[in-house]
Amino acid sequence: MVRVREVIVVEGRYDMNTLRQVVDAPIVCTEGFGIFNDAQKQALLRRLARERGLIVFTDSDGAGQVIRGFLAGIVPPEYIKNAYIPDIFGKEKRKSSPSKEGKLGVEGMSPEVIRNALAAAGATMDGCAAAARGEITHADLYRLGLSGTEGSAEKRIWLQKRLSLPERMSTAQLLQALNIISTKAELEAMLSIGQAETQDR
Image: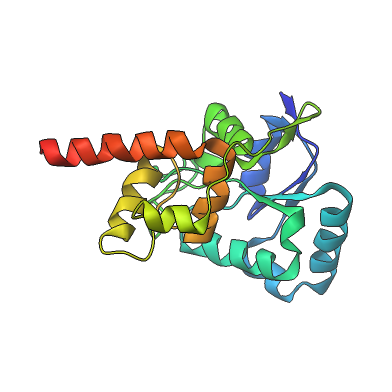
């Protein structure tokens, strides 16, 4: 079990139960969209964010993105780190059918995926924070064809799949993740591989 300093914010109690088997950390549940009307919990999250920092760890579907966006609006960005799970299709064991988008949520992730997601978010694990590796900017994303150009959305989706990141990420969220898990040189090399693979088809 790995110890994480930051407070981890999840959507539901099953997500919380899954994380508690992998990490030793304070975990707060938003109760799904319940956070929108819960002024006390919002105030608690702002306080915890100032004291320890938050890691937002929601599902990769549309609902998870809405909750992630809401939290970004009520907590200053310098106190938030974002952990992302990959898009994996299937259903959790306790459910009779898959979710609306057919993707597994946080509760359906393996311990290895959870640990990797937290590391990629820059979590302070066992007393050590992962330092940002790159100095990738919005201008770099544009230059590399990942934003603002024809075909940039498809290129981002290819990159996100390669890095086991969810498809539903804004460009800003992708940039934040890239600066934790990649350097500019590594990103350029990866995109060159992608271009070569496309030309070989």
